Amino acid sequence: MPKRSKMRSRRGTSNTALKGEAVEFEIHDMAHGGYGLGHYRGAPVFVPYTLPGEAISAQITGARGRALFGRGLRLQAASSDRVEPRCPHFGPGRCWGCHWQHIDYAAQLLLKQDVLADQLSRIGALPDSVIEEAVRPLAPAPASWGYDHRLQLLRAKSGDWGLRRQDRGIEAIGECYLAHPDLIDLLHDLDLEYERAARMTLWRGSDGRLMAVFEIDGEEAPALATDRPLSVNLILPDRQPINLVGDAHKIFEIAGRTFRVTAGAYMRGNIGALAGLVASVVEAARMQGGERLLDLYAGVGVFSAFLADAADLITLVESYPPAANDADVNLSEFDNIDVVEGAVETVLADMVEDDARYDVALVDPPAAGLSEEVVRLLSLVTARRIVYVSSDPASLARDSRRLMDAGFQLREIQPLDLAPQTYYISAVARFER
Image (tube, rainbow, N blue to C red; front, side):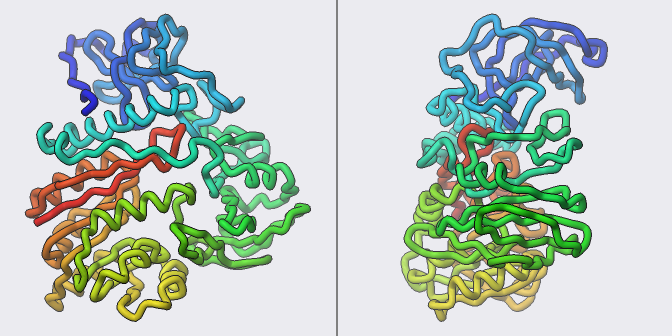
């Protein structure tokens, strides 16, 4: 198990007074959020685009509580894991759509493993023995470049489309080596006049069809031209999708099954890696046949489709109506799946009132994780096992502690890399009564 960082002693440095000062120190760990972590006069310093084992000089740019933040000035000693970034937009003051292009991919996997263990220890207060027993080696992505079938863009002040910078500005982009090449070609071909849209998402289905989705504050249609076949959809402020041109949904193939996903419904962008995620979920569920399974935050029904044959009954809960409709379509061949449209808190409260019981619960929450109320209700309706699909190690660590306090034990965590070149970490955790 990779080592976890220990807090250094404080020496009374006035962090505010250090702003603007150039300092020298070593990076000894990678922090969650993509920053290298060092210490200066006992205070933690977070600097992007750095690596453990590197000696740097940095300018202190700000402070938050005891922590300092810095901007690298000079690399005095480089790590052997440092590589040349591919993208011309990558680097200090530029695009922050990815964070680790300067790190060899094999080293990225080890660093993510280290970050996950650190979060479980510091935020979840899990003993080292539990972490070492539970956490498996991180599974690499099938492809480390050009893997994302989704390109989410924001409008820069220039009117061009781009990605967020560290300073919260927008970097207009001409390249993105994480996105599927077809999406970059589409971006170059688009001629768009649509001031009402501040956010645009380009999608590529497994069938090669392309879609543009605009999040807007009204129903005015865009003026858009491209030589490519393109579906266009709007998402209103209430998340209602409106189809303007072509298809209202995308088609994705995952582990031999096909799924419909309506514009506005959530789907992870690394489609090629989702078969591995599904396999981890199926393994963690440990279905023996005849169990009742509860699938929460279920989206378009991907996980239920691969668990249905082993279940007596699956109750699928999804709050976004178009996604629940997609689940109905995607799971129409199964007569042992009930699709419930509604908020997880509300549905669970009704289940508790009705004294409903399930053998296994599968949760795939947003990055913020589970609320305390969901953990409480979940513990009342789940008899044996919880499978937790995580997209954020901090919320997983916090929720692991909550679930353990509610009577479950953490048995296993399978981390997976669904987002190479970034600090994002996905994982599938199994908890048992």
